[in-house]
Length: 452
Ligand SMILES: Cc1cc2nc3c(=O)[nH]c(=O)nc-3n(C[C@H](O)[C@H](O)[C@H](O)COP(=O)(O)OP(=O)(O)OC[C@H]3O[C@@H](n4cnc5c(N)ncnc54)[C@H](O)[C@@H]3O)c2cc1C
Image 1 (cartoon, rainbow, N blue to C red):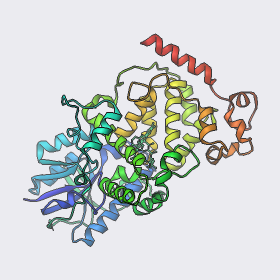
Image 2: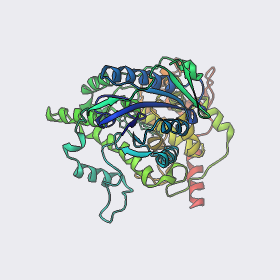
Image 3: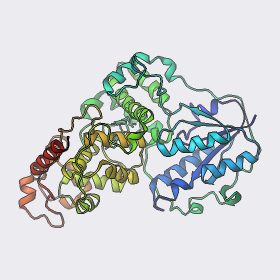
Image 4: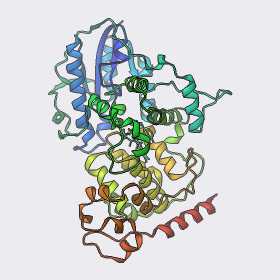
């Protein structure tokens, strides 16, 4: 029986569940027009994915396989493939609503095998004694620790596979049942090729070896390069989660401190798990409904990095220029957006989704809910980050702020952490804070109390 291996969040040949599937296979990648049509033509992620897909194709060829490339909706592509007498499709799990609906439709056409290749644990494996899902991270984490054995990090070896006969040299556009051969170029899909600066996965692991011991102590400091930079690879599966765990196990054997980092990997699992068990969290509040305003002017100033809060504006500039944002900055920005500006977290989530190279529906949505104080553990609604105190603590010399806001390079670092200075001085080309911290804090708390 001919099998379709559908690569999507697992763009690698090493330690791949798809490649551990025996038989005659057609490895494919679909440039999904349902997604691509909503993106700007200079979206950096499309360039990154395209580059990774070409690398995957080259790696597969070196193994005697290949990758068939399609451009169209998955439904149209599989309708076409069904005419070629394929009956089975294998793909890794994906839990956001679009992905679930898409996979359900494909499963009506072909026998669909979902592989848990992006996460360590299956969502139904980690349950409370009464069989219900965990809602709080710490007990979930303990349950994962108790469940974990080396079995979860085993490397998947390649199975005996033969390649289905197919014309692998084109990018096949499938529209209204018709198949057209396009050149294998980003421009064929109307996208602009861009250079995307992402560390190679093995290089990122190698560099992280020197950082792992001080990860917990340094990861919050905005100017310290103390984290792993693995999120983009985890998102697209250019590195296997099991390989990262094996890497940590080895480091642990050499007496390195690995637990704080492992915990973050489990946070990633937890957010995917919550979205799997509670799909409504994609748009509905978890428990509390924070007050929201319709202040379009505040939103416009926020997305242009013109709030007058140096840390917030620097973080937005980091996102707009690099496609990433430091985790501490994401937390403070999320809090500021939902509490100081009282804008709906869903709007902030969409803004991040537009620019983040590592955009992952579950991590982004649940992190935004956490920031908004909707009740996602362990953030209480009354925790409101003070952006000035945060920059003083985590960017004392204002190096992060000045890197992304060079307009502030002549302002003494200490002044950039003081609202009174920013409110009372004119800084050429930089606005005054759009709202005072204390009044914003009080406004949010009183509105929250009124609503609950
Ligand atoms: C508002 C907000 C939105 C976010 N959106 C995303 C997103 O779309 N995609 C994304 O991958 N991460 C998201 N995060 C989590 C976190 O900011 C990034 O994973 C991290 O900054 C990536 O850098 P790193 O790989 O160097 O992280 P490290 O600190 O080296 O962490 C290692 C890995 O653990 C995972 N991880 C770490 N922290 C978290 C977390 N809080 N939640 C879930 N997973 C985590 C990531 O996969 C990360 O690559 C968000 C956090 C916030 C507060």
